[in-house]
Each structure stands twice: as C-alpha cells, then as structure tokens.
Amino acid sequence: MTKSADLHIHTYYSDGTMSPEEVVVDALHCGIHCIAITDHDTVDGISPAIEAARGHDLEVLPGIELSTEINGKDVHMLGYLFNWQDASLIGQLQKMQNARAERMKKMIQKLEALGIHDISFEEISGSAKTRALGRPHLAAALVEKKIVGNMRAAFDKFLAEGAPAYVPKFKQTPQEAIKFIKGLGGIVVLAHPMLTNADELIPALVEAGLGGLEAHYPNCSVNVMSFYENLARKHHLVITGGSDAHGAAKKHTFIGKVRIPYDLVEKLKQAVSD
Ligand code: AMP
Ligand code: ZN
Ligand code: FE
Ligand code: FE
Image (cartoon, rainbow, N blue to C red; front, side, top):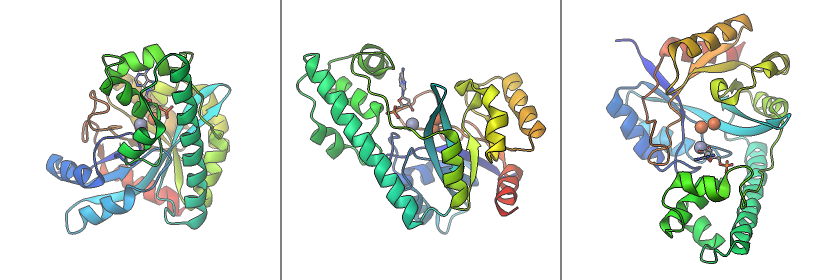
C-alpha cells in the first residue's frame, strides 16, 4: 500500500474542535502516514501532536496557515517545515494573536450596539483553547445563546464581510508571509487556490518565493485539481493537498477526506533543502 498524507488540519488551538491528541488518533485510525498541523496564526498544536504520534507509524510535520491580503483579496498561505520553535516566530505570532483579541473585543462591542448584551470577551477567550480567536468562536457563542439558529446564520446576519458586526483582521501581504516563513527555513504553499480565486497573482507570488500549490482539496472536481496540478508544474511548484479538517466546526470535511501520496511529501522536503 502506498503511504498517504493529509497536510491541512486544524486543532482547537485555532478554530478547529479537536485536540492534537484526537487528531493523531483519528489519523492513525484512517491509516494515514503523515499529517501536518496547520492552525491559523499559532504553532501550539504541533508539539502535542508530535508527542502523541511518538511510537506510532505517523509522521507529524510542522505547519501553519497565515491569512494575508492583497488587492482586497483574502489569500491563505500554508507554511511547512519551518523552524517552529524559533523565538522570533513566537513573538511575531503573539502580536498577531493580540490583534485577533482586540478585533474580537470590537466585534463584541458591535454586537452590543445591536442590542446583544450577553456575550463577553472573557467567556469567549476563557472557553476557547485557542490563541487565535476568530469569527467562528463568536459565531459558536451566538448559536449557544440561541441568538441565531446555526453558525451559518451567525455569519449571514452578523459576522460575514459587510455584515453589521464584521471587523476586518490585521493582515500581512502574501509576499510578507513568504519572506517570514522562508526566513525560518520553511516553504510556503498557496492554500486552496480554487477557493481563493486569485490565479492572476500566482506569477508574482512565485517571483516572491512561493514553493507550492494546494491542488488537492475537499469537494473539488478532478478537473479543477488537475488544472492546479498543471499550473504547479508550469511554475515548478510542489503539489500538496489536505482535508482542511476543523473537527465539528466544519462538517463537510474530516481528517483523511483528502489524501495525497507520500511522494509529494518527499518533494516538499526536497524543495525545503534545495
Ligand atoms: P476569521 O479568521 O476570524 O476571519 O474567521 C475566518 C473563518 O470563519 C474561516 O476560516 C471560516 O471557517 C469561517 N467563515 C468565514 N465566512 C464564513 C461564512 N460565511 N459561513 C461560515 N463560516 C465562515
Ligand atoms: Zn480555520
Ligand atoms: Fe484557509
Ligand atoms: Fe485551513
């Protein structure tokens, strides 16, 4: 049997619901041989996942998903195989996490102005394990308090871009994210390009040092995936893929929904050492 990998997984250290230990158990159960923990703006899940996988036939790669913005477009960048224990990284992530906390306070104030008074910052930051507070945490609180019926309604009514409680997030450019991760010895992959809709930016990102495209993603047609595989080949980029599993926070996907052959992990490692 060929070895397989799922290189896009979130834990409860960002906006997923599973602990790193649960992620590892699930991955072993699915018969996957390699996973990457790719939380938003935090590396806290990496070490516990590596620990939990020790002694098992499961490799855990360090990863992260950074939100960037260019020309008004949201572009998610996946970093892999960087020095995740670097002190300057931890300091930089702390700043991003603080900015997320300040944003959460502003969104709660906006909800207050809309007459929703029973959501406090303390209860959200206290209940979530995450260091990277995001709109899904606030949406979950709105559902729990029965202010809306479900997460989708929370976004539609309050939190989606343009909705009354929306506050934009501080974001770096994709080029800055590439420089940051490459400076830590890692490689940067453009996350889910089929959702991002920014193909015209790819040549400039390649110029800036982009290393790969996430061509394999859930609920995506074979045609779309082979389009991005071909685009990756054209630009000499590594091809990756993953489930973007968030546990119960994203019901349409789960660990192992997308599996890529382990050869692609080897190519990713090769690209880092080149
Ligand atoms: P944030 O990083 O705080 O801006 O939150 C972004 C996350 O919110 C995304 O990763 C999605 O999981 C979720 N999200 C964004 N828009 C929607 C939406 N319209 N419905 C449900 N979830 C959404
Ligand atoms: Zn997420
Ligand atoms: Fe993403
Ligand atoms: Fe993701």
